[in-house]
Length: 420
Image (cartoon, rainbow, N blue to C red; front, side):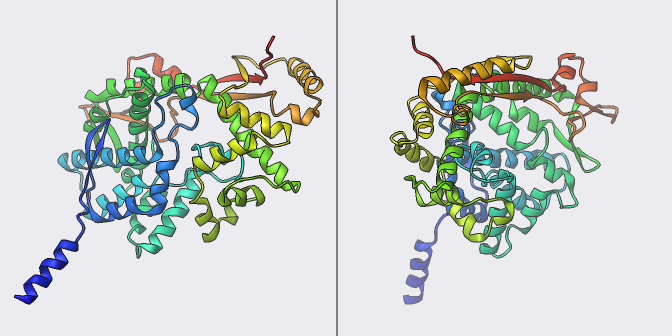
């Protein structure tokens, strides 16, 4: 009797790791295995709750406060659907490959810095979030006794079955299928609301390559059009563009001041990156751990303090972002006349008694580009009933798709608003 009671006590302490999560897009999301549960519980992954999925887009679309955490779970959910569909169609995916796919897609964005993309252009040098994601995965893999080895191989495209990598990274991957639908939902921009379930249902594999069955051709057309519209209307919205440009300049100015010996209030993690020039080769385990403590809250808290800084540039830029009193922006199809910018700089330096270099933090030009489909990069191929495989642009009778495969570049100039 004593032994039985002991067993009961042990069982009571056993934690149920096959949880169900509620998602506003898909309904219930199930955690498929204990490895995924443990990855979600890990502090590196939990950090994604504090990283905005769409940077500062909430300054335009007030509902866009969803996080990289939401997005990663959504991607994993879609991957589960994709595995079920492909197996139903006779594609062999082993249990180990399935587990690795879920882990790889769950962690594909784990390396994003504060406000998603702004960090890559300001306080770390020549390193993108994909590289940092891989570092995190390798660090967790050591902690998890090699459980992520296959996931990392698939993530890097080094595994011999290429279609598994395409599910994670291609022009029609689970990442894009989630973020378009999710960002459309949270912004309220209906043009991005793709039918991700139908697209997944149309997937199959031929010669180790992902293809879409012929009857899914119109869903692909809608997906590419939605991608184009979401970029112009949401991701490259002029106000979002100004806000991200200002955030990049806030961080660059802070780093410049710290380099010149100024002591700025900031969290320990942010202070480290302001004081050190960090590029890919500098990302030791200790640096990665410090990076893992950096999130949106560090940046917002710092900017609230920097509003009172005695440096005009840092104070002004921080105040603009915190109070959403941004620069004005003009977007054109042709480059701006540089003399106009120089006149603006002259006017601003005179008004605020600052240097020309300081004025250039507030008056600057740039370019934006939108290409919904790359014809020579991991093509989206259509499988016809005749077994012929054709690129979507050649397979469709929608002439607009050919236009979507050509890059469109626009030019912008930001400058201060003058109150009369």
